[in-house]
Image (cartoon, rainbow, N blue to C red):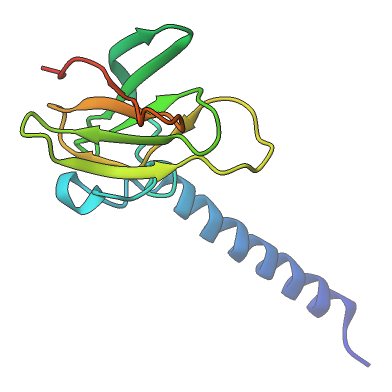
Length: 141
């Protein structure tokens, strides 16, 4: 017969080990920096924790934000837009990064695009209309 103390000890060690692994994962810093963040989700790469809004633009009823993480040195767009809209960031040369199309998944609230490198970008959206309208904030300094 197996000793109950041995079984309880094994369960405690297993739970403690899993808990420590999860704690180490959550306390770990960002998983990318600048160029290595390009086209990745800021939440999955742990860049959202220190994010600030550096530029904001208002277009009719839509507010577009450029979010920036100093720890990751990367930026992304955030806005509440209709599904099939695209969010992305753009540099001063017109190069687009992190383009992401909002799915029709029933989730309401802000959507965000994937990241682009650095801070000197602008946040953009492309609305799903026949005019193929692109709206962007000013370039961040």
